[in-house]
Length: 187
Image 1 (tube, rainbow, N blue to C red):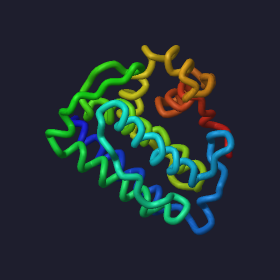
Image 2: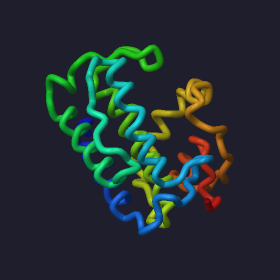
Image 3: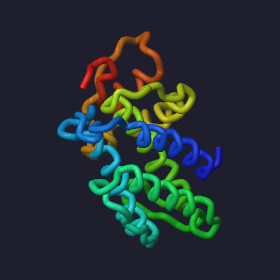
């Protein structure tokens, strides 16, 4: 699937979750230590501008504060990223990172950001009592792509230690355990 199409689908799923946060739900504890639901969105808004600026010289507008309006902040960011991916000149631009190497902007967004949105969908759903079900095919693809880079992921400090899940656990539980989440623990 093309990076723009993948982002459109993943972002739409996250948008449904953002819009579905119940009143008072933005301060609910999230599965990431020390985070609340609002921090899940904050994380996705905060790291991408620097990533694109350093890697490709793209200046992504900061936009609306997640503290002022998390729904509008997310929707603005999702549209901005979609616009980048649908512009062939921007999507095909060279991206370079000491951690990821050289690739196109669309490959960098697809491999890092869109995956992050997908993974944090579970965190937001868990924090706010929404449906936590992730697409099993996407879970399999993400897990298969991440496994070869496990050591680098753990060394980055961006992922917690692997959580052991039963061998017969479904693919979603395996993926969550791999990234350091306990899929069976309630927040």
